[in-house]
Length: 351
Image (cartoon, rainbow, N blue to C red; front, side, top):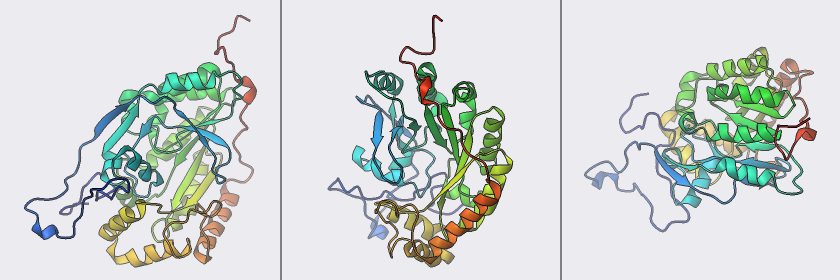
């Protein structure tokens, strides 16, 4: 898409307000500026040395689990990403900053090792990542996620991964090794088969065809793989559910999941601006249907309802998903993790 004042290659088109800062950008009188207030930012890297890397997740929607986020912020730039709001804790904004100012945790592998080797630790699956994509573009050079997988493989610890990037194929050696002991689940996130939509909604992700090909490659390597058809956005991609599930099943996916879009915090303003600029002809339809699924708002923070939505339109989406899942994934399931394989001493033995 070529148009004046549109930042190609970025999802967000604004610097949203950071609720923790006193100063903020405004465009109330843009006609008074001698030069543009914003320009398309280049990616900046900020190195962080955290004291811990494993986060305990207590959300009733997700169940008891743990996650590791080697990166904060994400170059993929997905316009709907709920994780955008976490960037405000770093003093950045959830808009353009989120996808251009990336915080990197170089000591992630050593912190993970320290965590799982604690006396009395009983292994449960740890997710990569609960927040931003662990295979975003910087991973190709920094290999922090690969370092984490090495730790999981060394100590035979269960891990789950979710990504939009075919870069995960680089680590098939480690994933296949973990899969031999039922220690890994992989999910590819697939939002749309429409490349024109994907390229503006998820501007720095790989094509959907590459994601489906990745599903096929992982499945053939014996790695348990599924898809997340998420988020479902009415008026944009809800009608694609059956075809996405069919194609994923054909490529060897063992399961599928979905969530309804919710525009929490600053994401609401960022998404609204994006939607007006890219789909002015159907803005009202999409926006109102999102609101109809969240009690008249674009976000619902209530556990058990926030990711499923409510109302007639949400129910229609769920019916379509359930019918598609029953048709294409009947009798398919991910293998259970084998938690007995965990070894504090690593994967070497004298016996």
